[in-house]
Length: 251
Length: 106
Image 1: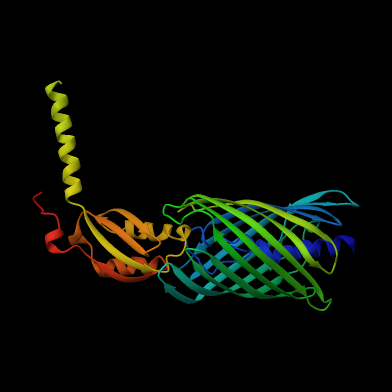
Image 2: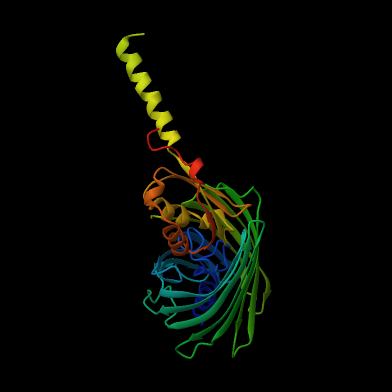
């Protein structure tokens, strides 16, 4: 049971933020362009909980079918180190996602966009590091982005199989560029994000405050880092999560 | 200076001045240009057009300045299509006036 709740916690952290293709670090972006949404992404996420330590290394590969439609896949590798048990590692559950842009209102140096996102997670992962359940998530991703700041929001609902509880997710991010916007870019962006998950049936809430920093050295490469600190944790299990990652464009 | 080196230098300088003289600027107003890291696709798409020499993006003004070496091979419609394919909204496109265009014999 202890492993199961540990696994569910890791799973919640996964559905909540690992699939985000931001530039916000933990929140999705409605833009499917360039590094903002179109870049290949990998990062290391270290999660410290009362039950043990976890390290997750996902690889996120998006592909723009058209300007308005993107598909992609996420394959994580998971290391679990429970306090009362042996350390284990293996591939986590594979996730496919699709995004379809539904609103695009462009102005001079600003844009408002919204998209529908569908994420399907399959229980393909090693049983010792993954929850044996499929999950379907529907979400709406919005953002108002100007050259001076960016505001991003996501609301979604996740249906989980195998009698595990469904959950509601919500993410909000505010981003601010610390350097003048120019092209080719050399940018330093600061983010403050809120990442929440409400697990239905058991009525448990988990809310992180997530500050982050992002350095872009060219049009095709960025490095980013962020910390997630729980401010509401009904399970009282999460201490913090730390993320360090990169994104790059091949094309 | 040896005559051969002199000749090479003169040809090099003539080459540069000829290239500079034949380059014209097309100004394109593009809406939705809100982040430098999403503009890479726009640069790539516009560079696909024949005769585009270089591109400068002014985010404050929402302007794309294209240095074009061969204006005859480029149309407003093509530029609009490329901008839409890159995920942005094209607005006014200003080509250089006839008297601003370089003489073909230059």
